[in-house]
Length: 347
Image 1 (cartoon, helix red, strand yellow):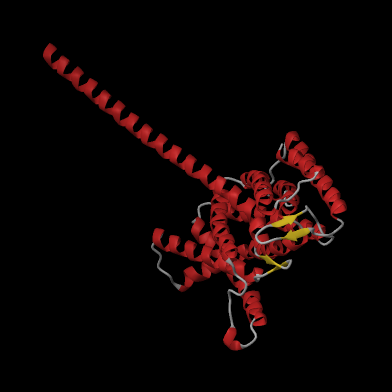
Image 2 (cartoon, rainbow, N blue to C red):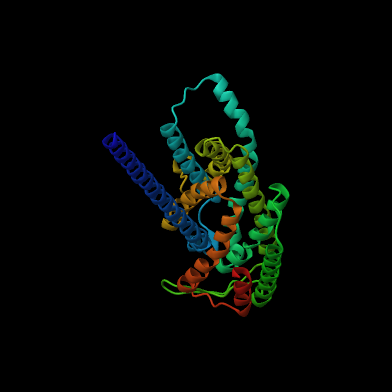
């Protein structure tokens, strides 16, 4: 009888140890998985900061005699089309689907909601290119930080998220920082871009032209509305595949940009035999396309599984990248208004 009891106790101890080891192993695997996800997420956010910060600098590098050399609609068409191809490939690989008329009709009804942010992004992305003619890269990045203000207000109205007192204080700092900078730079520039060109270097003073102010206001409003509305749709159908949701959005975006892209291609070609969709494209144009494709795909992940608050963080910190690149590439001389705004907007 004692020997039986001893054997039973040994078996229980062995089972407990095995269970303990198994649980520990599972916990370690889960912690490792979570750590990898955290590292990947941080890497994506850092890439977004670089992509946002370098955008205006890259567009200015595409300028020739103060004009954008390429069609903004063509560039945005390629960006939307590449994002659409990626989303289609990912969706087909991850989900085995059997298409039928009912399924297609259901998807079409679901997709209609995505036409609204697609239109907003279409207007916003094309406007973002043409704003560059009316201000230098750093001015654009500082003033586009007003997106933080418009996004926060719309986030409160659409997503019904309350802002705490510290957030309202931060928005007030942001508003007056941008206002101080725009008025100061608008005055000191005398509405003129001061450029000197030698063999390889363009030297600029910070400047804002008269049309730049209303354009940036419209841009920031459209950007905030598009971002918040898109997040609302993505989370409204949270169980839906992100790739399918992106397919809806990018399909509308592709077709919206296709018509003006073809129109510009015809307008820029002297004869039908000289049609060139990539008229005016340079190495920097393709660099914009690659970074914005990746940026757009990453942003959809952020909006689906996090929030626009991360986007505001990215926008705010991208100013550092823009200032750094503007100084070393364009040799921009920063004025006192820049430093005032830099402090208020990054705090």
